[in-house]
Structure formats: C-alpha cells, structure tokens
Length: 313
Image (cartoon, rainbow, N blue to C red; front, side):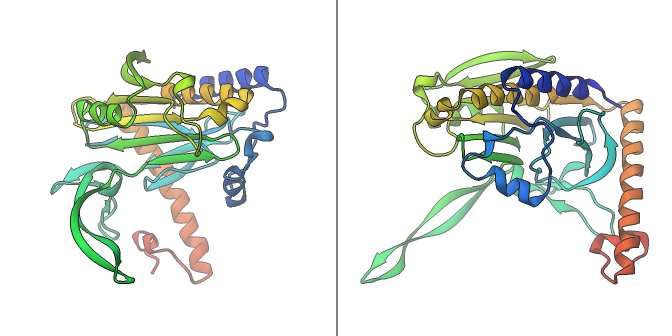
C-alpha cells in the first residue's frame, strides 16, 4: 500500500506543532464535530491534520488518489476499507466506486442488483431553462425564462466560519482553458502561474493578501487546477480566505500547510497489473466490511438496499 501520504501527514503534524503547540491533531469524525467546525471560533482549539485517502479507477484507464480531512467527507459513493494509513493518523483508505462515462453522462459502477449511480451533477455542466420570478401586482409571477448553468458541484468541501477559510475539491468534465477563462472573469485580481507538484503541472491562480475580499467565509486566495491526463476532466483544489482570515495568523499559516499537503496527495496513474491487484485487494476488504454490516442490520430487520447483493432482502 502507498505510504507516501503517511509521511506527508507526519510532516504536516510536525509543522503544525511548530506553529502552535496548542493545535489538536486528534479530532473526532462524528456529526457533532462537523457541526462544531462550522461555528465561529472553530479553529481556536485545533485543526484537522488527519486524512482519509480516496482511491478510484477512472475511465477504466487510470487510478486516481487524493487525501481529504477526516472531519468532512466527499460526494463520491465510497466504501470503508478499515485500511489504516499508520499510527499517527486514524484516517483510512476509502475505495470509491469506479467512475466511467456512458451515454453522455458520468457514472459510478455498482453491481446490477443496485444499478449505477449518476455522478453527473458533480462533474458536468448542465444548461436548464429556468423561470425568472418577480413581484407583479402584489404577487410573485414568472416574467421570463433564462438559460442557467447547473451542476458542477464541489466534490469535497469544508468551511471554518471562525477564521473564514474554506477548502474545496472539484472533479469536472471541463478543459483547462475554459476553467482559466472563467476563473479570470470571476477573479480579475488573481495572478496566473504554473507549478509542478509530484510530476503534475498545476495552473495556479493566486491573490495577494491586499486583494483578498473583506467579508464572507472564504473568498479567492489560492486556486490550483490540473488536467487528468487526456480524459477531458480536471481536478481543482482551492483554499478560500479573506481579510478576516489574516486576523488569525496561526490558523492562516496552518491552512496553507494543509492546502499544500492536499495538493501533494493527488496522484493520477495509468492502470497496471500491480495497481489493478491493489484495487482488487481494497475491494475485497470493502466487501467483507459491507457484508458484515448487512449481517448485523439484518438481525435488526433493517438491511440496507445494497444488502441484496449478499442475499439479504
């Protein structure tokens, strides 16, 4: 299994300790913790430095892997593997269902008993003819219709209201030039450069601190974008911050270290027999866990819909 992420996590924890010995590195991943992170002052007591790693087969030609903090989850349909990435982190490897294209849509592969999951709302742009409402004679009425873009949701998202930071990961069916044109329009004060990180070239749009917006959680700060080989898809990771974020210098510095770690975790690899074998091993682990969950839920008379794969109704 890949140990590079573990090394990176250890380095990040050490760096955060140097920044502030008061930062906590063992946050819980339950719902209460996620809600706590969305409240003002969330970073006063700590920042997540533990990650889950998401791995998946992409277009039946590549394996993609990336990290994300354990304190939030991503929109993929994934399975637990209980494969721990080391003693210093309680995150695990998440096996994401295969992502593929068919009939002009993007799907995740499931057994025939369940059927595929349509992932298109996350990765594809969709134009919808929407009604526009306005006040007319004291009431709301449709005054016209306009084409509006929908879809392209963030795949992974986390926000810290207390320090006005956000982290966003997107996986989109969109070429680099289209993204760069749109981002330049939305963020005209940003400056484009290019960086090479672990062999991948990232187009980077960054804002000077004086150009950061003043209000609202997040805001344009650091936006990185890289193509996924020759598939027409791209991955972007953004660190949002604003002028309020600068009033929390320790958290702001820690967030930038965290952002860098996420960038370094991204890997796009052509499928090889050894990679296929690793994915098959993870799949077997995930299925064993899911089967046992179905056994336990069936004892309570409440097996999930996926349990029909293992003969539970």
